Amino acid sequence: MRKPIVFAAILFAAIAFPFVAPGAEYAIDVVFLILLYGTMSAGWNIVGGFAGQVSFGHAAFLGIGAYTTGILAQHSVPLPVAFLVSGSLAAIFSLLIGIPCFRLTGPYFSIATIGIGEATRLIALNWNGLTGGASGITLSVTLPIVTQYFLALGLCAVVVLATIWIQRSRFGFALAAVRADPDAAETLGVNTTIAKTQALFVSAFILGCAGSIYALHYLFISPDSVFGFSTAIALVIMPIIGGLGTVTGPLIGAVIYTAIREQLEANFQNLDLLAFGLLLMAIVLYEPKGVLGAYQRFANRKKRVASTPAAAPR
Amino acid sequence: MSDVILSGRGLTKRFGGLVAVREVDIDVPRGEIFGLIGPNGAGKSTLFRLVAGIMAPSAGTVMFDGHPLTKKSPAAICVDGVVATHQIVRPFRTMSVLDNVTIGAFFGRRPQPKGREHARAIATEVLERCGIADRAQKPARELNLAGQKRLEIARALATDPKVILLDEVLAGLNPTETDRTLDLIRSIRAGGTTIVMVEHNLRAVRGLCSHLMVLVEGRKVAEGLPDAVLADPTVIAAYLGTSVHA
Image (tube, rainbow over all chains, first blue to last red; front, side, top):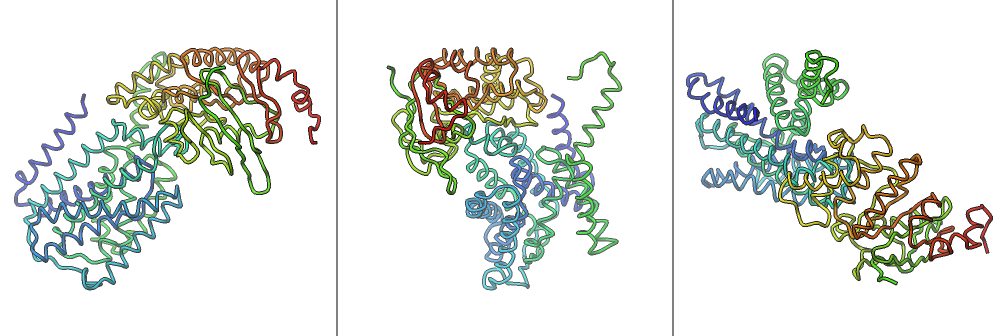
């Protein structure tokens, strides 16, 4: 029963943070970005981690969310409405791509999602009347950073609670079975197509909401920023850094990713894809379970040293 | 003669030019242990997959309790109450033995359990029946072959099937393990579940099955009570390797 206390403590600290550091706009901005990327990372993890369906096309959902908010804001639609519509449209879109893509498995699914991501980027680039084409959309609303911060914090908390619930529920068992062996899962009565489609639906809704916050933060969106391949890659890298299919892994991954990216942007522009590519290779080769896996191994070793040899490992 | 729970009519399966199963009719009596035997390459496993709905037949239909199964997904068939084990064991390797069986309890035919603890309780009960409750917390990959074969049966049982299809569950087991598995199969039948088993071990089949069917080169060559079937000259010829080509 230690975990809920830790969760509550972190949540409390995150709520208190903007009040403790009211002048430090930059610090609030950094934590906001971590929360936003953590949300996207945890959202991707529902499909990529829990269900084991590695998607390189999740930028599409982020982009749909961002563009929906951008376009609705131009027409002075109230922001809360725009926020919810953004998530919903992304979720509905997920059904359209889930039905064909989930006929494919493993690497074939992943390759198909690359196509989906690129297709949405090209549509955003060429549908001038709706999206403004290559010149993108500039939003003329202003939302105080503290409001943005709490929006991101709220969404992030919802996602974390959702993943905790998924892990313990019948739905989570279905996803775990799909990840482990889809054929065996089917013979045991798990409708794998429905399970995967549901996971993608939830994941897309979260990414759509995150896209809405993204638009409200940057106030400028273009096809290359939200639909870009580097965004899609970031969504894959973060959960892998932290630990796939876990609750906290994607958040840890988001912290590391954001920290590295901030440094690279400040000092070595355009090196980010190279750096993350190398990092990804290192993780896949040496620590496939990410930071959490490394931590667990370390903790187990300490436990083994502490306990007498006679004590049976659990 | 009791009524038929699972039946196939004119089942045929072609793989390119090869006809693995040729116009086979099969009737599985309710509540019995039905054995499907034949030499290597006779099409037993293919017929098994057709009946289990894992594979679609090239021609023919499968009926379960009066409803066609032929067009349904394996998941839907399992929910209806027909479940199959895999010849080559396929546990969810990284999951615990208990979680493996919990998935069977969560899905399958039984009314949906009320939450994880309920499903786990059902799974624990099944593990006890199958004699692997002591290894419940181990990752499935750490079980030996006999353990994994039991897990395969336990997972299927947890779905609360009306018919359970066992594909060579005795293969690779030593005599003690074989006897324990035979006891388990008898207890499953005593619980009211119909069993269809594909098997190589004729001695085990003779003592266990109430009904036998023999396939040779994709055709049914004999069917009936075990002693009569195993005394049939065609069957003996097939097993001794004499060609039965017409």
